[in-house]
Length: 301
Figure 1 (cartoon, helix red, strand yellow):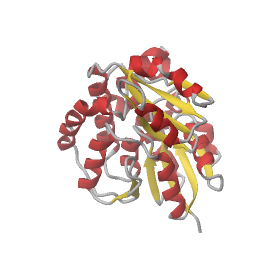
Figure 2 (cartoon, rainbow, N blue to C red):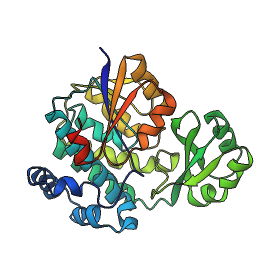
Figure 3 (cartoon, rainbow, N blue to C red):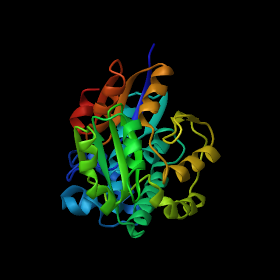
Figure 4 (tube, helix red, strand yellow):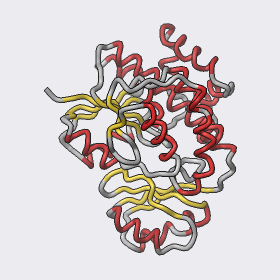
């Protein structure tokens, strides 16, 4: 019998009003309110449900909003008797996966994600990210190497989509270079920082300081790492991975290939949107991908 994985999206998947259909359900509302009450970001509820979009895009709001919806949906999927054999998350989603693998409680995951978003937002790093479509990753890496300024391949999303990150001016002023070299599209992403690039290195120790304030457990469900696509088996390995992924790549193609090699035939994408589904289908068309982002999706499980 095929194995199951839960995967979790990262930044860029946020949408104003996400989770509101769940929040309006009396039984689920209490789950949201419990988290809203324990995190320091007291405007999250209003920004998540009402916007504006520009405010939700700010990483201090986007990160906890996405993770909160994913955490609550995970609880509800589990209530249906569905249990994963593996979990993985894309970028921020790796933090949400700590809940999916039972490494951290819902409250501790949300405290950590909220703090991570706050630290990244206040770091004042003027950078951005762009998706390059239609080129092999190796070509994107070569183009980046030939550009002056900081611009790096950071997210290997599918065989023909690689995300670059770097200082804002360098990324924005070189999008045409990728098109000239054969990219089908080169477009800026709805993010507020150069995540996973070397520019984020000063942030990593500050995030690491937060680890000691939480209660960690060894994973009960196998967790596949962003930066190595290897299985993480204990708390020490997980904390090292979280530190490294602040300024290290998301090897999504390798992660999906690893899941397939390990016998995964069905993946639940848990959280807002369906960004990961598109990527997964381009990496391995044989894997069944089920989106769980709304209350109606739960009814169909």
